[in-house]
Image (cartoon, rainbow, N blue to C red; front, side, top):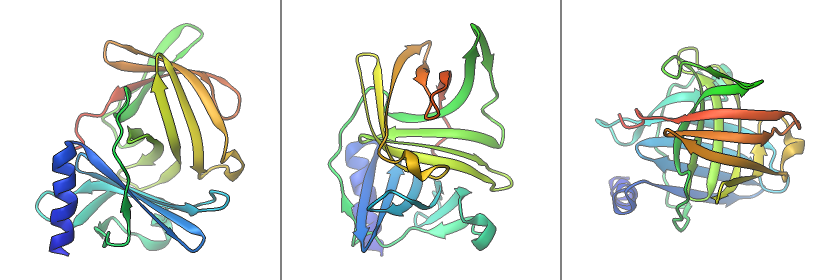
Length: 216
């Protein structure tokens, strides 16, 4: 296990940011993201992308094989707030690619009818969006109660003001898997302005701000 951990963290050190590991097993896909000291594990079916579970949190600096969870979609059944880093021998690391919007973002507000409505990001109720290595994922959760409110993810591209999501899994509605959504984006004073139509076809103008306290 120590050799595995040395390999993982040497990879993270080399690229300075993170790594994405994937494993296909029977009819499911397990996806593990390790980004800047943060861990996310997703499981969904290979054929139709049906959501199985998602959990994630901080890699404990004093014990690098332990994860302190911020969210756990199975919390009501397993009550887990900490897990050990799994054995990654059977996983495949994917080649690294970088894009303009890479990073960890928190939902910081919306623009409605021309009026900007900002929200506090330091509280326990969060919507996190993680973009790296050509993959996106949003997760809505409550850090104190461990209430899980939903997640979705897949591949993305961001270039010349256009941001495109290709959905691979979506906990709230499996029928959205396979959909491709296109948005306009602009960085204004460090904030990501995200404009277009939601997965339900409703116009949105979201404001996302960088999450700065990922490392612990």
